[in-house]
Every structure is written in C-alpha cells, then in structure tokens.
Image (tube, rainbow, N blue to C red):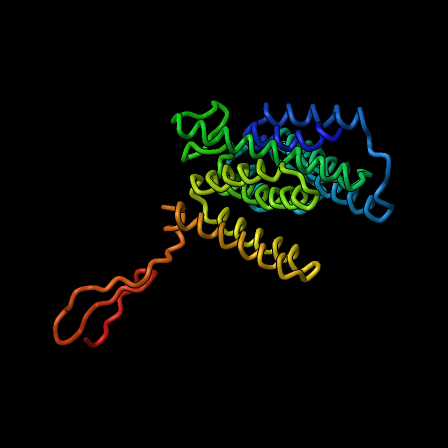
Length: 298
C-alpha cells in the first residue's frame, strides 16, 4: 500500500486529472480495489461520521421528487411555456446528477480512507517520496512532449503543456510538489544521504515546468510555499546556519525564476515606468505600470 496509495493520485494526474468519464472510471476502479484489499481499520468518530452522512444526504436530495420542493421559475417556464417533459426528480438531469453523485462519493471515500490510515512516520515519508517522484516524472514527460511539439491524445489544454485542461491546475500541482520535494531533500540531508542530489535535479525539472506552463499562480505558490516551509525549518531550532540556508534557498529560487522566467514573469507587470515623449508646453507624458498615462511638468 505504500506504493499503491500515493501512485493513485499520480495516475489521476497523468490521465488528465480524471476530467473525462473513462479516465475517472479507471481511477475509481483502482480506488475500489484499494478499499477491498486494505479497508479502513479505524473510524473517525461518531460526530465526523454523522457530518459526512449529512453531506451525502444533502447531495442525494437531487433524486427526491420535485413536488416536495418549491418549484423554481425556470422549471415552470420549461414545463408551461415550452411544453417540455421533465423527470419527476428534483434534478432535471438525473443521469448527470448520478454521475456527479458517484464522483462525490468516491472523493469522500478517498478523504475518509486517507484520514483513517494508521501510518508511522517512516511510512508517511515513504509515501510522500513516492508521490513526489511520480509528479517529477510527470513533469519530465511534460517537458519532453513540449519540446517534441506533441502531446498525449487525452491531454487537452490551450498551450499544449501539461495534463490538465487549465494551466493553473498544472502549475499548482508542480509548485506544491516542489515544496514537498524540499522537505524530502532536507530529510535526506539531515540523515546524511546523498539522495538529496537527485531531489535537486527534480526541483530543476519542476521549476522549468512551472515556467513553461506560463502560470502566475504556480510561481506565487512555489515562492511563498517554499519561503514558509524554509522559515519553519530554520526557526524550529533557531540555528543561524539553518536561517542562512533557508534564506539562500529562497534567493536561489528567486534568481532562477527571474533569469529564466521570461514571459511568465512578464505577466506580473513588474516593469518600471516607461517615459513618453515631450508633449509640448513644458509637459511630458509618463506611463506607469498598469498603462495609466500621467502628465508631469518637464
């Protein structure tokens, strides 16, 4: 299970975020096998179980008879004015609602399963390393396909980079994984393992992927997340060496992003003001960030 559990979300990401029904079906089938092979052995308690059951009941109201509820105006218009025959359920499209309900149950089951896992610290670290390695390999695949000017047939996005339809989702995945990667590297350094060199290479792959993804949110999450984690790491014991190391890593990340960020950093509109031409009468036009023209006395 130390491989199957972290590999399942990596597979979901590889399949385009399981945004299509066939890919979602594969992920749900594997989730069912995991639950059958290793079902939860602990409960989250009566209170949390009651809350989760209440959430399921709220979602299931879509299948109750529509006459039990106040009829919305759009439903009356469709029935009376357009003479459409709608299902008797509260949901006008019960089959679509059923698919969404199954997805909700699967997500809730995964959340419950992960919350009820009884793992020691060594198993947690092992699963985090497996997940991080899988996402780094996915990022490397994205880079290879991007430079080959191709993409997998089930990846659909505007820029042709990454598995998700939305580039922000791809960048957020890689940036959050980069923070986990820093934790993996720090743990190996603390135990005197030379595996941290591999994590540095993985970090380079993730940073390159975030830059090529052309997403501002990924850059923000990477810089802020790394700074917060390194600050917690440095201040845990208050060591001057730890603080210096944390500041150095953040500065290196910022330097790399500034040097190779290219068009991604240009989207932050960090340009200084562009000085315009003299307009006459001792006035000149100055354009500040945001494109707002101002007049100043020359």
